[in-house]
Length: 101
Image 1 (cartoon, rainbow, N blue to C red):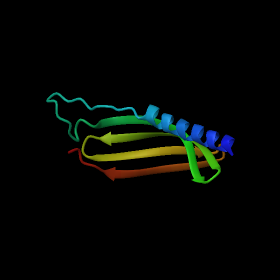
Image 2 (image 1 turned 90 degrees about the vertical axis):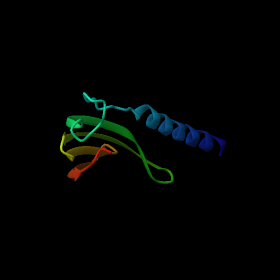
Image 3 (image 1 turned 45 degrees about the vertical axis):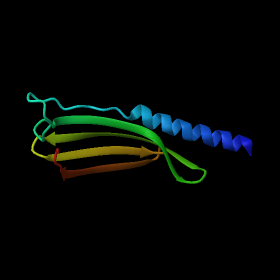
């Protein structure tokens, strides 16, 4: 019983460390020092990987890559490819409207 407890704690610690390590930040730069819809312009790529825990005792690894395009007018488009457990692939894409406040 103790062995299960230690391995579960180790798994939780690995997930938490992975989330903390992947939390990077980026800042938009503008000439006047203020962030606006116009300063968020261009293509930005991203990737993530981790473990999904859908049920007790079930752990599915995933990897995801994508690109998001910001048009500088408050619109964005993205496409993302995700592989779950080396077999299942999810492709998502979409468009949204956003506002920088």
